[in-house]
Length: 382
Ligand SMILES: Cc1cc2nc3c(=O)[nH]c(=O)nc-3n(C[C@H](O)[C@H](O)[C@H](O)COP(=O)(O)OP(=O)(O)OC[C@H]3O[C@@H](n4cnc5c(N)ncnc54)[C@H](O)[C@@H]3O)c2cc1C
Image (cartoon, rainbow, N blue to C red):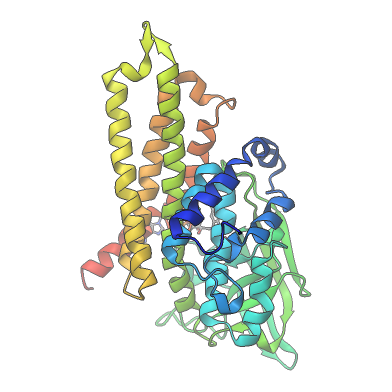
């Protein structure tokens, strides 16, 4: 029996953990190449991991947000770049199509996001609009053949693997009194005329996760490319990012957990002053504090996922989970590097990679500052 199907959420996560541990030796070469090997993506598809959150009627595993969070924790513990790629494909991209896609769009795109032939992209950020996503400038104009898109998207995860990107563009002029008006989501095939992907960004971490620009130059897509309603794109993006933030929180938990596991093992082996450094109270306190915060972050993450699974309001809880878990991951990975001493700064030990990879978690899908704004707004009425 395929261990990825039919078990509990925990069984699924354990199966993913066992499989992803088998990739360890491949990570250095893939990080150098700047790509997750295609056969690894294909295997994720074959195992069903890419379809975890896709309903069974659409061919997926029909798993919950809780199951996905547990799986992402395991993927991130094994290889953060892989977790990011899966989170974008199977979380915000597939999730948006499940939520707003027509039956034809679901039939066309969901199998391709699940089968491991590629990884979908979510294209919201532009050179002049990041945190202020409603200021996006990409435009969409309808003509007799369909929709013509113009604009430039930047920092787009999976762009070089993608069969499709969900592109957010504005129909009509920017109205400063209602800035989200006209923003529309389009399911854009990456082989559509006028669509091009830029060279991969050179990043601090997450080096095997592709991050590239996406240009739309009079790009032509069919009349059926609109995802949901014209003008409904901003609400869809925010709904997707509520889920995405839970997924980044789960990644943060996985990153911190593995960095601390590595540090604990090292501390028991490394001797100074004639004793394992794990005997020193200063170091033990650092581990105790980091592990306590890790446990708290996991609970916040699972609470937000549980609420989302039940269709309950979860925007604030998702932002709290992302804020707390991503900042926890900064502290935990830095503490882990410190425990390794000089070795922690060297590429020979994986712990430095977790510190670099974890750095992005306080930035993408809404910075820590934006999470604080979301949390405060929900608590203090304007
Ligand atoms: C590795 C990586 C992958 C990414 N993948 C994707 C992707 O797949 N798709 C996609 O669309 N985007 C993606 N992004 C983009 C990411 O979501 C943005 O970088 C992020 O939202 C921040 O936007 P910005 O970079 O434009 O920063 P800015 O918005 O310019 O912010 C700069 C600084 O100002 C702060 N700031 C801004 N506004 C406020 C405010 N009102 N109050 C207080 N502080 C504020 C920010 O918190 C930040 O510290 C990715 C980014 C990275 C690093």
